[in-house]
Length: 239
Image 1 (tube, rainbow, N blue to C red):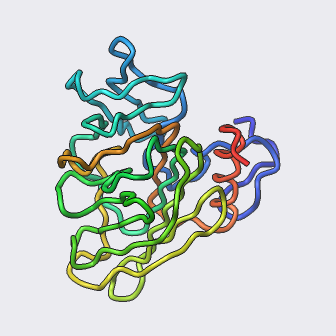
Image 2: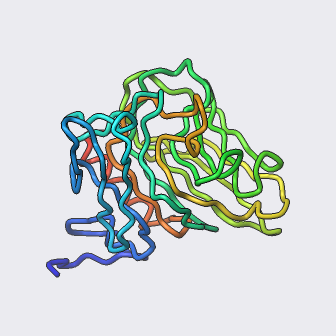
Image 3: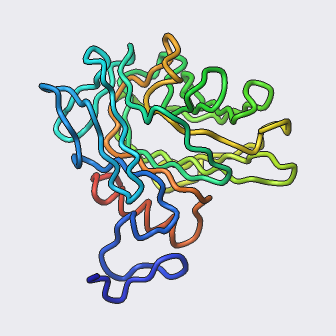
């Protein structure tokens, strides 16, 4: 396998690292990889994990633009989706992104297939998260972005007693904040189906670029978290 002295899930890597060395990888939309174009727009972004979870957009007018390896969403109606939900309890999302505007509410980075729940979005100065339980257990974390600045966004969801979810966000390898969502039915679950939209809801689309996106079925920590963040930041020239 050419791994040399590399070890995952416990010991920091000494040689080349790849996200698929973490066994909890569920889907990986890798930079400039497995992208199918319809003219200059993206109709499919193939999954680089072994799980076959390709995301696609069959409606030409809703296909995001291809931009030198980045996938560029217009904030109006562009998105890519699986077509069905993947359910998570503990999870980690890693996304290399940039926004074209920080003045718009409801910029959804990822979501499930139903409106009103299962979304993570940017609202001008903060991130808003809702699990499967919906509005009764949403949480927010203040985090101000800069227009056009590429950064690594990491969202870690951890089931705590109840069960309910604690969600934490990280920016370029540094912790920003965390919060527990209110405990209620299904507050310990999150469904994933789309990037750049809140299940097609009007005026709730990501306005900017997504360079790479990966989701894991575990709350990554320790060397797994450090190695994954370092790999993404290095490959995308983020310091």
